[in-house]
Image (tube, rainbow, N blue to C red):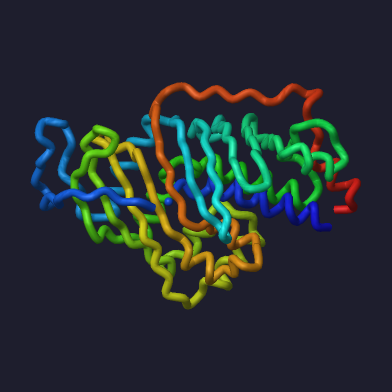
Length: 302
């Protein structure tokens, strides 16, 4: 049914925003040789020259902070989407709230107590036969689509912080340039990184439903795909901005077909992080404003 497919693509794109933590513009500066600081008293250490050391240091910074606000710009399949929200990275207690703008309208997402809530545009809610603004996707739902979304969300919230891209950097990346620049008035280390997808396709499929993982592995096997990325890191080893261009991978995954694998891959993405370490509280919508998505699927025969 077309409305189900449309929802699946939209939700897949929304989940991709949470899963990737990544995105495209660069700042110029002069590279500092590894081991030599030119921080000018800012407390900023010289850039790393090894991708694994960079990833490890930044992971420690984000795991200590546990929360941040984010804003994201993403282009996918010729469409652009913007999102902003807050995330708490805390294992089983992870939570997030995000609003995504797209040509179809705004979609708000909340993930709390292992349950995903999506507030879809009114026209889309009407297609599903409900006048309630929120759709609830429970972890114990029995329909296949709810199970897939819930599983992906549960996995992604444990990977939704920037350590997802850092994991990709440590396993498949190499630093091809590093310098120290000013970003929003702050001196930061700026890295240009090249990611070799063939080194670990599993890393890029991580967190996706099993069927999407298998689809990605088959479509990317044997292909020489390089992904350019850039990362801006502050003196506390916290990412302030990450950019990635996954266009080449999207083409290999059949972006023009709107496949689940292509939606998971994303496209050109830029993410900015602020307010590291500030508390993030997320509440479920009022019960009388929520419709169970699993019940909708049953009525539609899924």
